[in-house]
Length: 240
Image 1: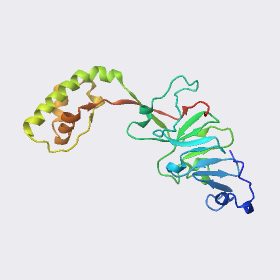
Image 2 (image 1 turned 180 degrees about the vertical axis):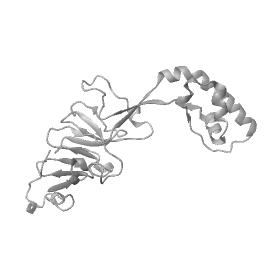
Image 3 (image 1 turned 30 degrees about the horizontal axis):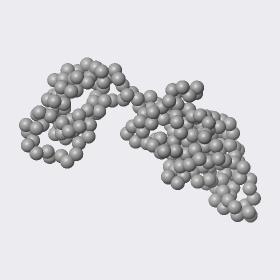
Image 4 (image 1 turned 135 degrees about the vertical axis):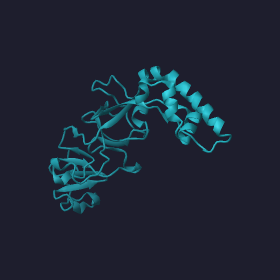
């Protein structure tokens, strides 16, 4: 995974930020924006790439991108690239940071938790890794999972009429008690999966305990829960 510039002579002064160093990771390495490449052939991504750093790096054949970026490639659930992933499935409730490895045809999530001890099983020199490759032509080691959130048509089919009844009742109760709205904005209330076998009256009793919740339901209705599938890899075709 070492780029062609790892052993470039420093006196050329062409790559002043890529001088080979030792101290920070106690291993010979060079930094390249968010990438750290080691003399051993290992590679890792550190930190959270800012918008300028989210781009394609030809020296590694890797792209750093978020699922919301226009440059995010088409993603698939399967290696055969027959099951496309809709953008809404990987941007629901926020974007996700990815590293797209075109050499191996996979996308992997950047770990976004606390770093410092979690990855020491890979070696203390890579304990700050957000993404890690053990060497050339090796799959990245998945340190986090990509969240794929798809619609749940079974839940919607079962609960649509119940929630419609709930919204009508909650709206009526709210309007009776509030001539003028006390809240300036609302958002759809996320329907609970535990309601799957509940009656409308049971849900109404629960939803009328909180004034803000009542306003949200009256104003915006319900948001249906999605199926959450966490995967180590998504798959990509050749870079165009």
